[in-house]
Length: 105
Image 1 (cartoon, rainbow, N blue to C red):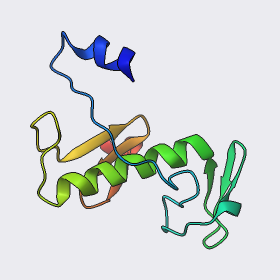
Image 2: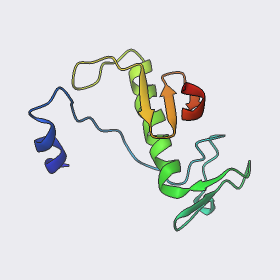
Image 3: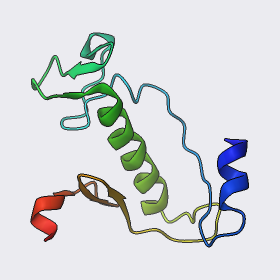
Image 4: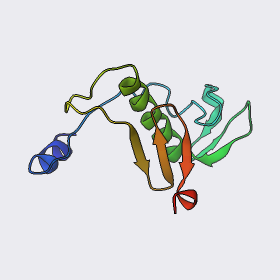
């Protein structure tokens, strides 16, 4: 974390954090949380059947949690009011809506 903070000092970027609790067990598709959802590097929701790389699922949950933090009217620690987060595979906005990259053009 300190290395990341150091690297962004000379940029317009900022570093912020969210509580990562249960993000690796929570389904980013339906919200169901259970320890059996994650098996090492694979994630399979026991409720809806959603399957994806476990780290990617956790990253989407962290992004969604951060958007929820901003959506409640709070500003980020950097003073910005972010409205969406870009993921390599698409865009996640504060309402939790996800648009795949192939639809973004």
